[in-house]
Image (cartoon, rainbow, N blue to C red; front, side, top):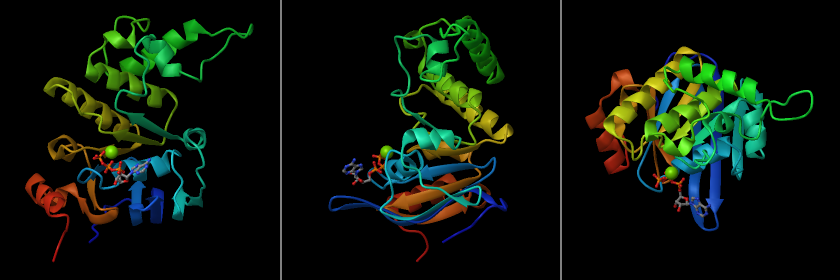
Length: 252
Ligand SMILES: Nc1ncnc2c1ncn2[C@@H]1O[C@H](COP(=O)(O)OP(=O)(O)OP(=O)(O)O)[C@@H](O)[C@H]1O
Ligand SMILES: [Mg+2]
């Protein structure tokens, strides 16, 4: 069942993606696409294959079979480094940030600018990270603040500020609202809207349909490694989607 939105040329188009772990067939011929500036919610029960699908995009896993086109060109994403170089940034719940380091260090982690002497250019880091945070509407007094002292919503903000600074084309958020307070969830949803307004495409994985429904243009549901629904949010509602996820089928 397919119900595509009006996004003519997809930014990313995946066709017939298969991935197995030993005898477990995590992905069984999935087709998935996302347009420029589109927000797609990726939903499905535990073990459905959501994380495996996005790990194929972010270079942690390689598909056993299938094709990936990015901006119309075939790509072979062999590592997380290659995925980032293509403009794809993945934000995992918590694990992407170092709590014992400052906000600025976290934003630049592994990609720090250097001075002519080859030292870490802390001034540039402070200025540019403050710009990225302010652009997101995140009010932080100093980028020297340790990430470990921030709230969950603020941490997601820092992770998202990083992808904004490095000008990602596609941002993948795997359960960004898990374990967040209501107010923090609202903040994260605002960050997603901000990304879209900048023309960035977002894949948003969640178990909580209410969180994704308000920001997503389209919802894709997977069950047992197969795509079972692909619906524009304007043509569905939370009840119908919950039903699809629970039953693991769509249509009769
Ligand atoms: N590295 C791995 N090695 C072996 N099996 C794996 C591995 N990663 C995932 N699987 C299996 O593949 C299937 C899909 O897992 P995946 O993590 O993609 O599901 P998910 O939809 O993200 O679930 P959840 O909502 O619980 O995060 C599951 O059966 C899982 O046990
Ligand atoms: Mg997962």
